[in-house]
Image 1 (cartoon, rainbow, N blue to C red):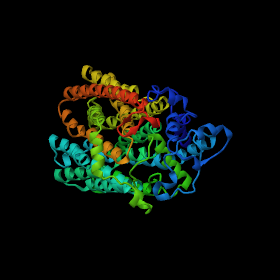
Image 2 (cartoon, rainbow, N blue to C red):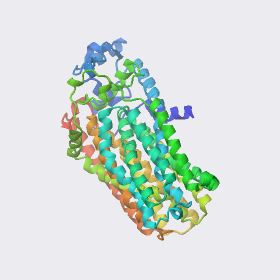
Image 3 (spheres, rainbow, N blue to C red):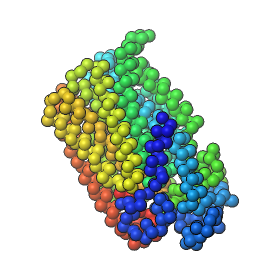
Image 4 (cartoon, helix red, strand yellow):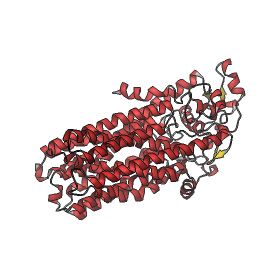
Length: 559
């Protein structure tokens, strides 16, 4: 498993930036200046590192060093904590080896943990759908509308806390504590559902769970964007989000085991055991995560100073500029008074003034409408007419297929440096599946269609990786943008369950038609975004300044 995990990550790390990618192929000078596979990062490097801080390794580096224009002395970064710290020259074998070791260390510290956390996040959010196949509705005397309310109310709390939570995380700068702490809270709340006695208790707990869970997904996307460059983040995002797809499959097996074997044990209904066990497991995973997750590059104390500096410089090189705000700097207790700390309000305003937000938001919203079928997926599979055990088991293969294809899609997107086409095929396959579900009553064909329905999620990790790179700097703006867009990505979860109302199966005409239309809207949004970024890159190639990014640094948007 360890070798497979490393292979997935290292496959494209050897050449993070393609020799000719859509993000840079309109600037021949940028390609000529590349001295290794990290083409874009090398361009920005020249404007970041002063000559007196470079280690001369060989005469072959002379031309590179002589061309460097000193603008930022990194000995002054973070209150001078990197004084007397030297790094190998960008483009040398020593630097490449150092970066590979650094990424490997961070990958193993972050990715397995956030994947496990997301698996539990998804289990706790959607176990109510499996509980419905037990005696939840009968025991709590729920009507069809009340059950739909319990599904949807979680996302009301989730949406209300999205943006504030991300801004708090950016300012606090302790993701290793903040994210697991939120997880402990929603784990406790999920455990409490095992003891509710009616509709009011269930709907109140679900609202609070959404409030607590709001910290996790956008917070983790922002967190990853603080460690990985724009040519590294797509596959890491896909691996992270893969946790929810695997959880979707895993939840079916867990629900089958619990509902079939624990009903009546110690006087508790099977669905109560489901909430109790999954909630306790969530708390355990959160406590482990607190001990493993790093904070941010400059504030992770178990990294050496050289590694911490490398982590900081990688992000400066990737964006072509130094951040004006210093997230999480309070842990160092030095130089904070000299840093230009941006307010949360200014971050929101910077995001709202960026016209790209008004393309990304509708695109993600549209994809989320189609993806909203995840909350009713057991009900859709149940329409095939099999009993509860088979239905629970049949929900697993579509999620497993989605996990495999989304990771493959993310890896290939990073290798080619292309986002747009990789964004399209997911909703296209879902659209095909929706059409089959509407037009056919054949059981085998409909199940094949259900394998296709969840392919919409191939676009999900790419959409957020794409967004994190186009709202690159400063971090407070990126945090705000991620939070705002993820609000759009969760609004559909409030109303989509009502489209698949009781009695509308097995073909669910209203739900499938609405989801199909929005899949098309999502593809149109991706097309518009690609064209906008292409035009912005033309301006950057001429040395213009776009959204606070100077084209002369070599920065280009990826599309």
